Amino acid sequence: MIEANVKQAYEAAKALYAQHGIDTDAVLKQLETIKVSMHCWQGDDVKGFLNGDQELTGGISVTGNYPGAARTPEELRSDLEKAFSLIPGKHKVNLHAIYTDTDERVELDQIEPKHYERWVTWAKEQGLGLDFNPTCFSHEKSKDGFTLSHPDPEIRKFWIDHCKASRKIGAYFGEQLGQTCVTNVWVPDGFKDNPVDRMTPRKRLKASLDEVFAEELNPAHNLDAVESKLFGLGSEAYVVGSHEFYMGYGVQNDKLICLDAGHFHPTEVISNKLSSLALFTSGILLHVSRPMRWDSDHVVIMDDELIEIGRELVRHDLLGVTHIGLDFFDASINRVAAWVVGTRNTIKALLRAMLEPIEALKKAELEGDYTTRLALTEEFKSYPFGAIWDYYCASKGVPVREQWIADVKAYEQEVLLPRG
Image (cartoon, rainbow, N blue to C red; front, top):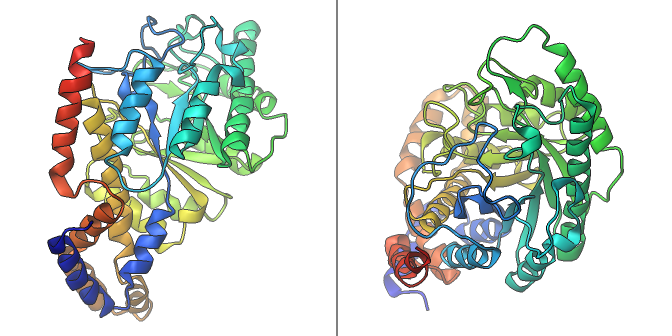
């Protein structure tokens, strides 16, 4: 049952928003349809279960040693379940290829749907969708910093075969779960210092991607995405798969273009790119993260950029063509809490945007009434969207406000700390 004070606050807020033609009941019905793809790798510090003893490479670094990291697929699924029990709505889980659940020893270029069957069974039981990613890092064949653009054709073939296998697994997920799987290709390829030849590695990457995507798959089951990066640790001078490279490739080949909030200049934001990219693509993949001075993948908070991302998606009616995923990892805090904070904030940002008087703001702007545009935008910052959020959480049977912290602390004592 919804507590009387939560219901009362909702009704008061509902009346305020109604004065501007905003139907909060309809907004919450729309919010319920939005799925956020929660990344599995926050739960175990990007180790996975295929080569769990392999050192992280590809410019990826996880700091902290908070107790309780998942050590097995069962533990990771338990942690995910706990997180989802504290987040309103039904969502998706984003898996990397290294998160196999099998007793068989298998190489990355040999992975098959059978190595992820337990994930599919679990997702069906939980009513969740699955997304997928080839893992082109933390492997013997990626230690020199190159994969799909590697000059050695044998190594390049290994990664091509891995990406091909990953697409088939993505299609299997989509077919089994009745929810389209987004399979996202990111490679860390690049040079630490200034290269002489920037073109040839990009030619190799383009040719590799052409081979990876050669087989047509049912788009109802699998959608392909490509992800750029400006720089990384160990590739500060040059990344083969730059934003311009993948924007061109994605537009030319009708692939989803992934925008990661941390993959650009420190002062550059992805919110401003959405309205441009949407004009030329059939869809967009978002990796919502929080860079702090560099691509540091901090837990997503309700900062200005997250709010602007939400606004751009809502104001331009992009929610139907945008796939929203999370990408952060922090081992200095409770990992389940990190999921809950980041996912709830992402949903909150969308709700906040939905509760703005969009048509009135657009009308004022079109008429050159910038005074009203500014005044109305500022006044709505203090409108009681929190009361709408509290009611939404309560109506979905998840804790209201900070009540969820006690649940996570109890889970930590009962489940996480005994792991050692």
